[in-house]
Length: 300
Image (tube, rainbow, N blue to C red; front, top):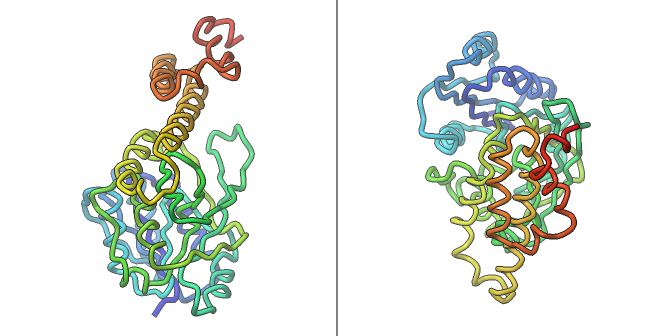
């Protein structure tokens, strides 16, 4: 039986998939399986999987599904390993990750491990950045708008007994299913932090968390808003914190697109104003305002 089971959902990410598969193979351990669940991709994914089809560690499932959560659940059902890993097709593991995990999971009292991630931008305009993970209090999940919890999905690993205890992913969720799963997981298990880079995340433009961040926030709100009563703070204080944080997020989104998509930037600015007009009119936002008023001069 394999010790590691790596679950990789796949859909039209063929240009990244080979590097993902290589990163698992290059862990230089024999007791693993990688399960690729492909949603009938129409790009070069088919050619990549054909080249890898003779790898004895690789199990390939090609069939239609209703989203990433359903694909992941197919993989979780097929997983035979003791340690479960979820690695998207555009992500990878750095060398020696499995050896580090073998050591930490040799302690039978540890069921869930999380670590840091190295984020690499595909536009090559910024240097790789180490994203330090953080998880101190499960109730911080309820602050769905904040970044108090910093769990990087490919750098979270857990025993298969966790699946037996809490079940599978919620297939009604498509953007924040990982946070909902960790929320259920944290009710029964402690999360153990390893101060190591355990995964590589490629921040490419087709990523759901980049293209549809608003939907990520909407799903987090749907998941965690019913649990507000578990927090000790006054509702008015939480509302103020939420509005200020979301306004800042939308302002940053507006900054990121104002030079290329004026309309999208304007929509983000309106959302920021809706959340917190006071945040929008602060001096720190004047640079953004100048790009709306003098767009040509601002781009010179």
